[in-house]
Image (cartoon, rainbow, N blue to C red; front, side):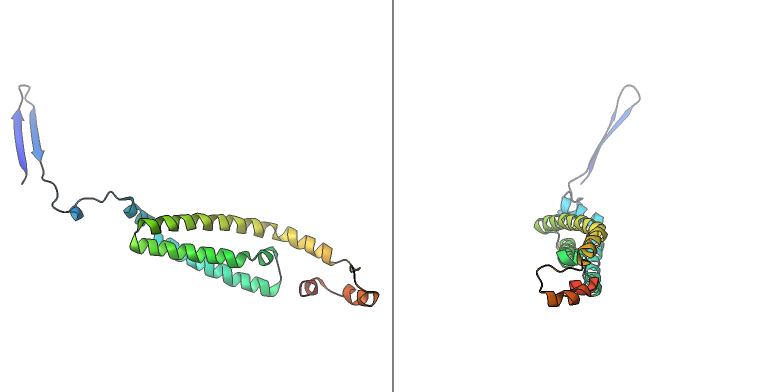
Length: 166
């Protein structure tokens, strides 16, 4: 029950003291736990977007590998980055649903790893044209190394695409 006291001072000032009782249960008090701050960042939306980016990375990587090889195909980036994105997204969605401290920390760690994988992907995609230009220079030589003389004319007719399909 609340109690209040009113005091009058000589300078015509009024001092009112009002005491409120403590809340009877924890639900009525605001939560000070940091785990509830995690929900303010909309982790379910973030996790869903990460899963979709992982699926698109994998599908576009398969399409690129079928069409023409590139640096990202040689490194397998489209596979390992897609798996990291999907794992990170799934952990983020699970952390939002269950709010356990261990799951939130694991989600944060995988989100950092996914950011590093994205930076590596930007690097690989940026140097892909340079790598492919070097591959076309080295594959355009007419003289094969360590092949018998009878096989040399057949090797000279190979195009750049057939070089990668050896």
